[in-house]
Length: 234
Image: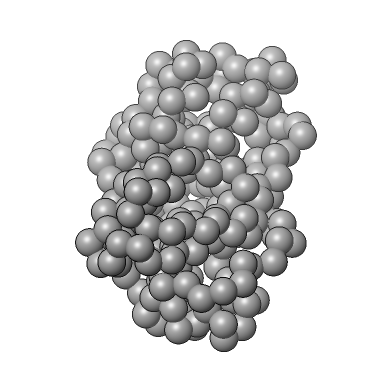
């Protein structure tokens, strides 16, 4: 199957390798580019560090030793793996989404503790909302995802030719951006005809709102579950 991957380049290449290993042909067409914001990490001492995306890891690594010894709560195993490679060893790993990460923090970190969330500029409020009543949460906007201004030509050509068999979706923003760019290119019907395999219900929402007829959600918010949809013929 020829499978569309619109993740940022580094993550898309990792997914593409997994797809090739499964016998599929990935079309990598990144719609977001990850870039540091240049915002300095907050001063002061923190009792725990929260990381909801592997995109924050390079910025955390640039902080040197100041944050290395702080207990780290990673949203999922991929983020945890990137943190280990960057030298962070005191890790607790969630089940792949913000709600599960918040529960893990509430179980293990005493009320009143000071937490630092290394986050992207565009983020959902669930984590902050869940911890607001019990902990002091400081958000460091460490990175941002810069949106593509137009549909990548290889993707536009694939839609015109009808050569795609499925699309993988990892974030609500990239899914919504894809719909916007495809609509501007006059190719929305070709896009909506495809099976769309989504990491979560939030990711699926923009595609369903656009009229997607075959939109599927992974059983768990991780890549293994997402690729299982593909293997099971969703």
